[in-house]
Structures are given as C-alpha cells and as structure tokens.
Image (cartoon, rainbow, N blue to C red; front, side):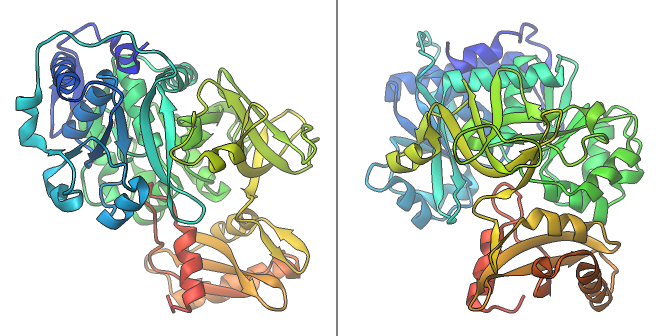
Length: 489
C-alpha cells in the first residue's frame, strides 16, 4: 500500500482542521493539493525518481513531501542549511532528478531541475493518480549525520513507514482530537513521525515558528495543543531559561522526549512540574524509521532513566558479544527487529552490512537490563571513553553534573591522551545568571568527591552555548573537533 494513501484513510471530514496557527489548512485542501501535485509529478517524472526537498517546516514542505511519495517517487530529505559542497558529496554524479527548494534556499542546488513555491500551481494536474505501490518500494531517504559527521542516507520503504506509524499511534493512544505543537524539523525522523501519526488519526498540527522556545507555552495555550515533543536540549532550554515549568497549559495531555538521553534531573523536574500530564520517554533511530521503544508514563519514576521496552511489533533486546541476551547488570548492545527497520544505507552496502546482521539492526548503543526487562542505555559504543584500561560511560558523569544546581547542560567526551589513552573532558553550560567560576569550582569538587578517580574529568570547560546538529542534539563531534584543534571555547 502507498504510505500516503494509508495516512489519508481516516481523513474523512474535508473541513476538519489539519494545520492551525499562522498557516491554516483543512484536510480537504491538504488532500486535494497532494493528489494534484502527485499527479503532475507522475506526468513529469514517472516513478522511482529521486526528488530532493530543501525546505523549512511549512505547507510547502508537507505538500511536496507527501506528493513525492504519493507519486511513487522518492523524497530525499536533507537539512536545508546543508551547503552545496556537502550535497554534492552525498549524491556524487548521480544527482536527483529534480528538487523542490524553498525560495530562501534557491541557490543551494543550481545544477539540477528546481521548483519553488510559485511553481506548484503549474505542476498540478487533475489526472488519475498512479496506484499499486508495493510495500518494499522506497518512499524516502533521510540524511542524518553519522559518527564521523558525514551524511548517511537512510532508505525507508512504504512498509517501514506504515509499520512504525501504526505502532506509535497505538502506544500513544492518538485520536482525531489530538493536536501537536511541532517544533522539530520535518526533515528529521522524529519531526516527520509526528506529522505521520497525526494525519493517520485525522488529528492536527501547529507549527512552532517563534525564534525562542520560551513561547512554547503561549502556542500550546493559544491553539489548545494536546502534545509537545522535544529532544534533550529542547527540555534543558525550556527548564533552564524559560518559565515553562510554571505554566499550567490545561489542554496539554502528554509530552514526549527522544533523540538522546535526557538526564534524570530534568526528568524529575518535568514530572514534578506536571504531575497531571504524561511524560513519555522514547528511544529510536532514523534506521528504525523513528521509534523502537518507550517507557510508559506510569513507570517514569519507578524506572527512572530507562528507555522502557520495545514498542508494539518491534523486538528489542540487549545482547552480549556472543549473541546471547544479557543478564541484569551485564552490558551489551541493543539490537532491534521489526517491519520498521530500514532497507539500508544509501549507496553504502558496506555500512549496511555492518549494522544489518542476522536479521537484526545493530544500534551501536550499549545498555543493560533490570530484573523486569526494562532497558537502560549506558552509552554509545563510539562514545565510550577508554581511559587507563577502564571503559567509562559519559552518561553517568553527565547525569551527575546535570543534577547540580546552576548547571543548564553538560556534555562529556573523550580526548586523546598520551598517558591514559583517552582523558575525560566535560563541557559545562551554566544557567543564566550563574557565576561561571563558582559553578566550575563546585562541579570540579563534587566530581572528585563522588566519582572514582579514573572517571573525574581532567578538564571542565565552560561553554555558554552548546553546539547542536540539524536535529537539535548536542553535537559531540563538534566538541571533539574543538578539542583536537586546541580552540579555546
């Protein structure tokens, strides 16, 4: 089944709102625009062609994205801020057949056929839509930064998207009454999953377009939003720099968090600030379409720090080097199996074979389990710091530091050290109004008091603004590069 046909199955009321806020759109217009553009693309391109989409969140992105997949072509999603050189590195000589470009990014890709917002009317057609999509057809390639900082294309099929969307709708209990405030980029799998799930149930979205996250409560109240989702840095900023935790937001039913580990100190703050709302910690990867696990809100305190268990229709387990499931307390790698797992990496068979093995996706995340089977991540395999023969999880040190008063954010990385192999370095972002020298001394003293000597950061560097990548996650690659260059933050 074509994924877009699947999404629109429950959108029976053409007058029901799809998009609220600055840009308003009902389901009748959304479906009509997507079908007409899809028909036009079928006539111009045929099917199976790669179509690049460079756009910020908005109706232009949504209409083009859905129409590309509906026409049985392949949407190529990349951060629109990616420079031309990086785009050419990704595609090489086999460039996409066409490109939809938001006007502000018009110069990003001048050497292929381009269309912008004003071209959409001329591309639309009322001819019949091509049907008959098979589940294993590619629907989208999502480009995400790999462990080296280079872009990796994740190939997602129509069946992958249907499977993951169905699972998320089930465990979040979404209905047509749900309205999400979307602050995450749609070219990122987390943001796209919110779009997918709400269309599937006939719900609605509000696109957050303010420059400062402090406006989030105002948007939620103004548009009666029932949910909000963010990555760790989203909640860290909201808690440290805004009055988010002081607002009632009566329409809000739940909040979700994914895209990395949020330290327990912040989870507690959210739980204590919103005891009447569900806070759902989730775990996923672009390679898994979006989601792989979730921790039910009612287990948040009892299983603090856990990513929960596999979502419906996904097998998630932690295995040792010999392929056996670990016992409680033993560390192994998280692996996943399900219809949501990608076909592979774009133009990278070697990379694909490294992570898709024995019927499972090897996540590269190290974790342990408790007696009830709940999973706890201890670190990325590539992020584990090897110092003087010890394997050190940066998460443990980050969690400790973030619990200290005056700390807004923290990132721990390893850097080359002739004596130790690697040395532990902590980047520390103080809360606004906190004396950096005072908090630096406090953190250093507490780490020495509470950590074994080999885990104590050899350097603690004040960072007034953490670098983030296109998914708004703290960019540890950039931090390591700063250290390698000897740049003083």
